[in-house]
Length: 366
Image 1 (spheres, rainbow, N blue to C red):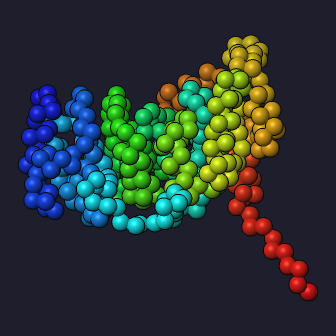
Image 2: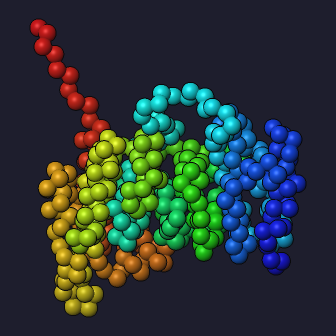
Image 3: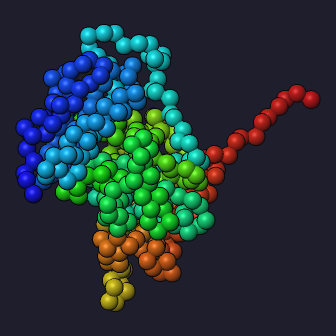
C-alpha cells in the first residue's frame, strides 16, 4: 500500500472547490486540524455559521477526494460552523446563558455516566449499565462521548464502520444495544489531536445525525474530568440525570466530588454515585481484600445527600470479558458481578423516575 503523505492529501483537497467562494478548500483556509497517521486521515471543514448544515455536500466531497487516494484507509471529516472574525456575529440568542439543550428525536431519556478522573472504570460501568438496563426491558443506546479515549468498540466487540446514506448514520448494534463511537470511525491506534470546538462538533454529529430512536434510554459514556467538553455536554444535551463513578480511594473521591458539583451547577439531576473496584475477590480462595479502601463512595453520597447506587468488585472476570468484547452482563448474566450491575441499573431507574416526577400542584384557593 502506498504511503499517504500530507502533500498528497492537501493536493487532493486542493481540487475540491467550495461553491460559496469559488476557491478550493485549501487556499480558502477552511480545512483545519489535518492529522494523518497509518493511512487514517482526520480534519475539520470550517464554514460560516450562516451556511451550517447546507455545507454538508462540501464535507462529503472532501471525504471522497481523500478516500480516493492510494493508502487512504479511513477518512474522518467534521463539519463545523464558526463566526468569522471579519464580521460581527448575528444575534442568535441572548448574551446570557448557554445554548438551549436540543432533544434527540425518539429518545425518551439521556443518562450521563461520568467520573472526575480517568482510570476508575467508567466506560466498563457505562457498557454494563446499558446492558443491565436492556435486561430490565428498556430499549437502550450507548454513545461513546469519550472522543480522546474511545473504548466502547473494544468493550462491545464492534468492528467495521457504521452505515450511512451521506446524511444520517445508522448506529451499530451489539447485544441488543444501539451504539456509536468515534472509535468506529477512525483506527484504534489513531490519536484524536483535536481542540475543544472540533470535539464538540463531532459529539453534536453523533447525537443529532445518528438514527437513535426509538429508545427509552441513551447512556452517554462521558469524557473523564470536568473540562470544556464535559461542561458543554451538560449544558447543551438534555440530560435526564447523571451517574458518577469513583473508586473508594480518597484521591478519586476528591475528583468525583468535583464531577458531582459540576452537574449540580449545570442543573443536571444526580441519579447517584457508584463505587467501582470496591473490593478485590481472590478467584482462587474467595478472600476479600480492600485494595483501594472501601465504603468511601457510600460515605461521600451520604455526606452530599445523593443516592448511593451500589458497588462493583474488582475481579478478573470483569476485565477478561471486557477485553474480549463480551461484557460480563451479557456473557455471564447469572453471575454475581452481573447481578451487581443489575442492582445498580434498578437503582438508576428508580432515581430517574424520582428525578423526572412532576411535583404535585398546590393550590390555596377553596
